[in-house]
Image (cartoon, rainbow over the protein chains, first blue to last red):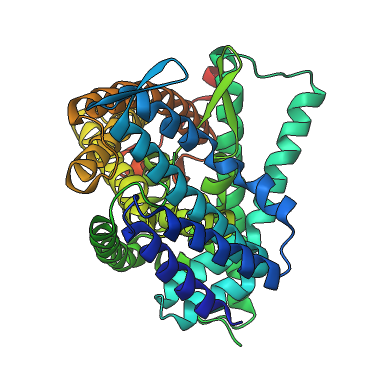
Amino acid sequence: MPAHLKVLALVGFMLVVVATPREWFAAYAFFLAALVTVGAVGRVRPGWVLKRMLVETPFVVFAVLMPFISHGPRVEVLGLSLSESGLLSAWGLLAKGTLGVIAGLLLAATTTPQELVHGLERLRLPQQLVQIMAFMVRYLEVVTDEMRRMAVARASRGFVARNPLHWPVLARSVGALFIRSFERGERVHLAMVSRGYTGRMPR
Amino acid sequence: MHVPDGFLDAPTSIATGAVAVVAVGVALRGARRELDDKTAPLAGLVAAFVFATQMLNFPVGAGTSGHLMGGALAAVLVGPWTGVLCVSVVLIVQSLLFADGGITALGTNILLMAVTTVVVGWFVSRVLIKLLPKRVGLVAPAAAIGAFVSVPAAASVFTALYAIGGTADISLTTLATAMLGWHTLIGLGEGVITFLAVGAILSVRPDLVYAARGVIAERDLVIKAKEAVA
């Protein structure tokens, strides 16, 4: 399936999910079933998705707090006094957020970054934005590798970041990373211009 | 922290999406002046840099750590328009390839983290650089204050959006106090790290710091006598 259709499907699906009232519990079961079907058809390994669902953690903590900080009528659950509307809100947040993460991960699992960039181009994203994204995706690995090398260099000199007193060292690494990234950007640009780059990628 | 799907209702999400589209469009125009034809490769590399920096953990103590958001840092380093573009691209890639931040909340996230932090951070540090004496050493503190203000500013925009289209049932005052209090602390960290990082870059390649350009242009070339150097 072409990437641009997948992105459109994702946006459409999530808009429907977000607009569904949180009291319609059956609808959410249906949404989840739809995602599981898509994942099965696309042969996405469940373990891969579950591991990456960790990005949701901070938000889950927030949702868990909801029943405690919301107001309104309260119910007793396992000896805790919880807000009824808070429980409902927490359920709504968790259900919608989780469906969003699963749907997004299914897109990521079945689409390469290059396909995604081409898909967004077909969706008429401005040419310049698409190009910035293409360059970012292409050099992401290079830049994160550079950062990993700096981390290895710090560690091999016995550096362990423990508290804010160590921030200056880390911040200097951020500075060095910026200078290296910027200079690499200049070199890449000059190398491309000397090979006839006019501001558009050839197909 | 990225806003996930379902936190704000559908109409608000669509509205913030529309605002984000307009803002990115304006930034695309403005960025041409900042980077001319080098825009795409350079902005792409800066976006990769912002993404990488967000993975670097700064220990806060007691086993917890935080990371830089980088909006104000990007604004000070490459200019506001390019900064908005870079952070927006980072958010789009995070949402589509890492499911970090919901796809329907993408407009909200761009509005909060790309537009608000970059614009507020840029504006505050710009005003300070104009007001303070023209010394290169004062650029980093100005950037730090910009970064510090930018985080609670984004938190207040979020609270305002929540007041319009929030789906959870919490009283606004609770949310506003929690958001502002918490993000003032985060802003402190953001300010300190931005100060240190901008200072490090200024001492090595001051010409690369966009916000320092005016200050450096006014600096006179000083030729020191040999004895003075030795």
